[in-house]
Image 1: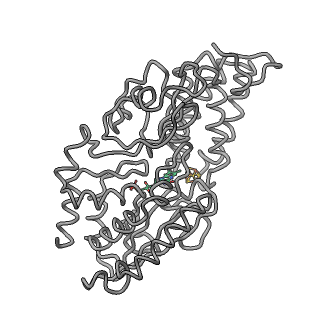
Image 2: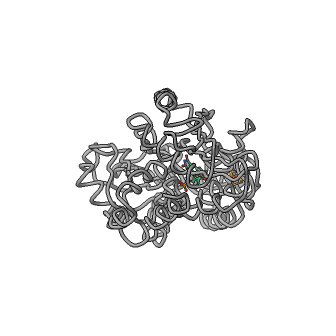
Image 3: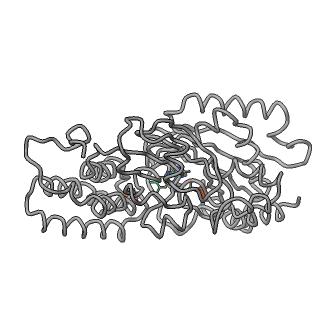
Length: 390
Ligand SMILES: Cc1cc2nc3c(=O)[nH]c(=O)nc-3n(C[C@H](O)[C@H](O)[C@H](O)COP(=O)(O)O)c2cc1C
Ligand code: SF4
């Protein structure tokens, strides 16, 4: 297929980015293809920092050639000659496996100056992150790839136009790129046939937390959270009732037990004030303390913030303090109102989704588990260990 037809096929398949934002891959590719430039890049985001996620790791360790093939197809489609796989340092086996696979691919002529004698030039390199959650945000990842501290860049310009070293760049998640060979082999229509609404194809859901059978489950979009957890995951490992489920990593909403009939699909989640993210599903039983989980969201943001903008850098620290005051019984009404204001400010005023989405788990905990924010005695510790089963 000519490059433009490859882009058209990926667009027609309905493939959306699996890294979290769900942006249509074909539109991103077309932007890079249409942007003039003698040097373009394809960067694979394998930072996989979300809690309870490990699908990228499984793919890189188990089937690295699918990723290499997907990146090569992307490069051909947009006219890129160099690619980088940005892998978190916590994944030593994945780093070694992908490096070995790249060496094999070069030896076989699947990468290099003349890919399979086609005249296409594309080579691939692994770069290792240094343990910062924010380096999974695409612009911070590009900074890190350039050898700089992982700080978020303001958008625009978007990476598709001004990306790595200022050049047009495709940034896609591992699973997005690894879906491409199957799409081109089976055709866009076959991929479109799977899934529901605007969530087409399959997603590799990852079951973690308090779950009897954790692991990855690849299925078409549309299965309910409840079915995924109970039918495939076998319920909680502790045998106690499910109380909350966090989908989409540390910035995802907490769903209550009576809200698990939600189909795994981007728009249904958005309508419920939640997000699918990278497909991580973390299960909690009825011993979980949701005020401490809300506090953890703020604490996580304070720890992982790149520090560039005030609502996130300062807001997250204030968020921890205000939740502590609420559970300590200090002016609960005033502090709950303050927490609501703070969440709004972080959502509206943060430069990137790190600060912007931290309010999602906090607000969902407040909405569905308001009782957990009631004052507790100074001797009863907060946190999962300190909570009495209901
Ligand atoms: C704080 C933060 C962390 C992120 N971490 C990751 C990550 O670990 N892996 C990933 O693929 N995308 C991550 N993303 C999303 C990327 O910014 C970007 O949307 C994605 O890599 C684009 O690829 P896709 O369209 O294939 O999903 C993160 C975003 C934010 C705001
Ligand atoms: S929201 Fe947080 S992580 Fe994002 S740019 Fe602002 S300070 Fe950095």
